[in-house]
Length: 560
Image 1 (cartoon, rainbow, N blue to C red):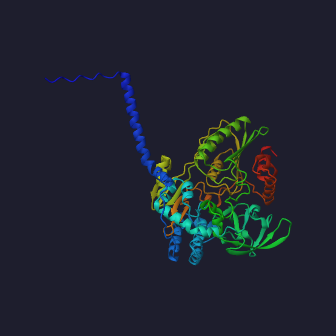
Image 2: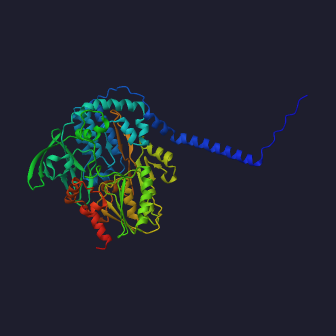
Image 3: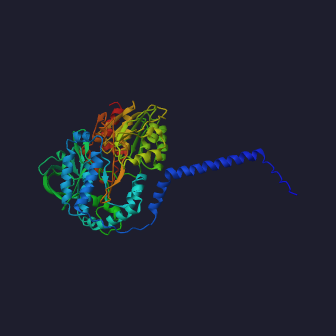
């Protein structure tokens, strides 16, 4: 006799509902995990991989002349010949890129070492279209840490670890040989190259009159520098942010220097791009070295590192109902959250009517900072900004596909492809949240670059903002830099493969201000003097002593 199974007693309705909720939640979590692994798994793996001590094997990194030329040709084709607006750059610069290539090909053929090859390749890259172009001393850890997700697929591999560590060991003596050289740096200010006292004690207070009998403003494309030419809208010329010389190695220049006491001295200055790389990159690549080049400090601005404890500074003036914000970079999430809180509190505290946004030292960062974090606090209405971007299709530009489709999850950035080119709209629109129609003054300089350039471009379209200063450094509204590896040396570099179709001049001359005002040599020297007195020349209060651009805006606000 078979006993019938006892029927299960159904769960109460409430428990059945709870069970279904847990089942549904479990499926959602599972789906989320699967999607995460699909979209982010590779990035996560590469990120974790970087932290593993996988070791490396030494690779023979010595190069023949033929290999060096192959790398040169590869970079020239990728960065220059595939640039969809190459002729726009040639016309603006007044040069032929074919002539530039021929000049560097001869130099590369004559290089006596791999380190010298790297040095001149970094200079060649800086002369090709685009100011984001940058090449650095091979450094596996630093590259992986600083170049973001797009770098993971390139550097987070055993091959690149082998090559990078091998190059680091191979270049150790090359970098160390410069340890005792004296830096002689001259910064471009107000149309002149003036001695940066911290790295140029010998000619402190001096201004270059001539180099080999010529005005240095006329020699922009004669210099070997790793940073791209920048446009001076006041003096109507291109220049290098600084000229970085040393006291004994490289191309020799005979300089006439006007000293602070009015006398003129003749000096011998030497330009060696290998020394520049050793000076800036050496301390990061070889922090344990006994003999290091001078400390790694940015010197495009006299105050760049020494007086900047945070990524922004806020000051208020209750009498003027004014908030002054100096935004120094656009990066860390924690910094953005603090900015929202601190800026809103400052606006409320003084019942603000006017906001000064100082971007003169802002080299960029995350573009979301511009249109999702900062500007919505200041704009009382929406501003649409969607310039069209074009680039040449190649194996490297697939990084745009992966970045946009995997990271951003937005159809607004959808790429279309046609006839070997790809197109997308760079959405930078702002949803205004401010309850008051603030009058906004945006202060700019040629150090206003990348994302800071985006902030400026959007403010240009906002009907209650005025741009005061000089041309920006540009390249904020032309896409994002991607990362590449040279095929023979396996050196890494970055460049922007796209051009803004609507505003192609932005990548060449930057955004023009509504009201021109640039820093003078006298202001520069006054800021240096105040710094030596222990005062912070970047503070709002001290700026009013020396900063002509800020004072011009303050007079405008007061109706003077």
